[in-house]
Length: 103
Image (cartoon, rainbow, N blue to C red; front, side):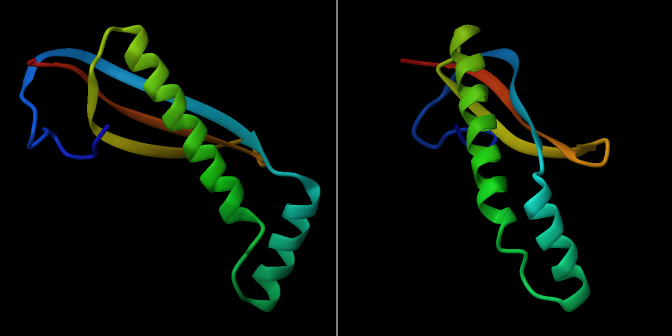
């Protein structure tokens, strides 16, 4: 997987289409409370970065799984999109173009 549109060391033979993976996460009450306090007093909301990293990793893993299912050797143009679902859920989607590489 790469965020680039191509690989320097490989040539794309065929484009297979969109590959995607997502996860929907809810925030727990404790992290919401701590985040609320931090918005009042300032500072980094240290409880959330690990949750965000874990969510991105899971979305990437599901992207890779989907790419394999559709017969891809690789995924180019990988991007993330995050959206809020209601007041306590977040959808993290990883997506890109699934491709076959020349061997």
